[in-house]
Picture 1 (cartoon, rainbow, N blue to C red):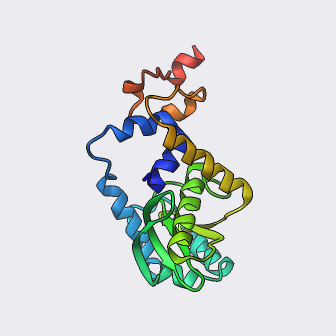
Picture 2 (tube, rainbow, N blue to C red):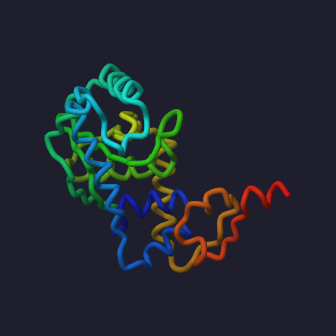
Picture 3 (cartoon, one colour):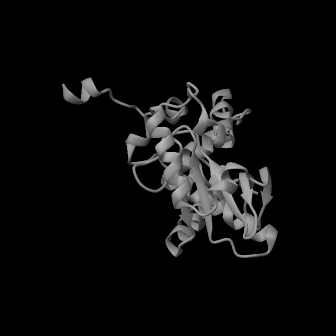
Length: 214
């Protein structure tokens, strides 16, 4: 059964998922765990005189972001002190871990350690969130119509509503993962290749800014 992360990677680049599945160790690097811990320390971080090095924004911006999240979302206090953490979920089609699960009604929350987009959530993370919500709905046998996505290094919380369009993106990613039998074609959008760990195996040649300008 594919994982939430499989679908997220497939939504970004199916070829990257093909190479990643061939790796022996798919665990995230240690610094990811350190950053993820921040999502479980919001009350302390709001009161702290100084912030950890993992936070790249100013203390004022970080606290402003958290205060905005508290004012915007009716369940922020539960996100700050979730009833359950690191919950393994197995749905009809996908499985994975929700970093937090709120109750009554159930809502999953996923913690990502990168930078957020100016608005909303990155497309692969949206697919990831929909997958978690669907798995939670299957387990609890009740509709789950939204998920939270947290960017704790910035103090930002975003909401993902399970709209028809987002569910369709989830289904496309699921079909892509199920059909993955060999290396898919390379992406035409080579901007995605620069940060990929598998670009040398993939055979994609990336050009420097200097070469593009010369």
